[in-house]
Length: 420
Image (cartoon, rainbow, N blue to C red):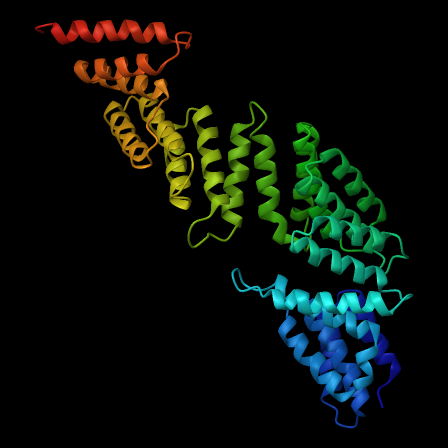
């Protein structure tokens, strides 16, 4: 017979997220052979919880299925039914990219819905609503998801942090689905108020990053920066939430890039994001955008070689970039600022070929003006004149700097006719 104190120790360890401690006790107990079927089942259910907490849902499911075979009365136990739903939802969430199976969320959803339909009062009712809301959110059923988060808040909190988790999800919906940053901030602040002080502070780090994003959306840049830095400090101070490090650097880079005079620090955070993230194997829009932003910031700092490398990386990570022509124009501008006029011309000619292949001819007069300037510097006056004429055709009469283009066109034509 199992000592109840040992079971209590296991439950306490699981509640405190002391997974290894729980697994050590369970391993020792499960080596015993003098247990009744229901006692072994009780141990296996606890090991399933430990394995789920350790991000091993397949192992957890195997333990749970064995426990149910040993003790069929567990089928009616609410905690076991919740555990089954949690395992299947975790299988979906933790599946490698491209291998997530909606059948897992369907099974989890059925578990939670069955509990809500058949059980009127139980401490875990709030958890069932929360998990069901998360599943609905993963299916882009935003309104129904929000309803379940609100229902979870309307009942007593169990576990103690459940209301905070629900407020965070409601804030997420307001910020990313409804684009209501002010409303999102209200929910995020409620999440902070309801988060137990004894819980892992790592969760709050992720929340601060959401708050930083909301401030950025509202144009409150200094508050966005302060909150992002607070999140980063929390990670660097030894938080267990190290997985948030790339996101923290990305958030700070995003904020700083909008604040004049902070380009160098923004670049540093973006580079740290790249260093702390796993390099994608193929096309990745986020990495492409980061490199493009580094390119723009470097251009502002007159670090033209770095800008060129970043723009080329942006195209490498997204060969189908919708603004490829614009990036190639920026590369040409960098070469021109570096007085490398040959490469300026090469970059623009490549840019024109890209535009022609996309059946989207270049209509920005500044491109041809730059081409004219580069050819003029190379003393290729005929090519310069042709480029200036095309620039004038495309420009509006009020375009800034157009008068200078007319002047250089005249110079080019005169120099073309000059015997020297």
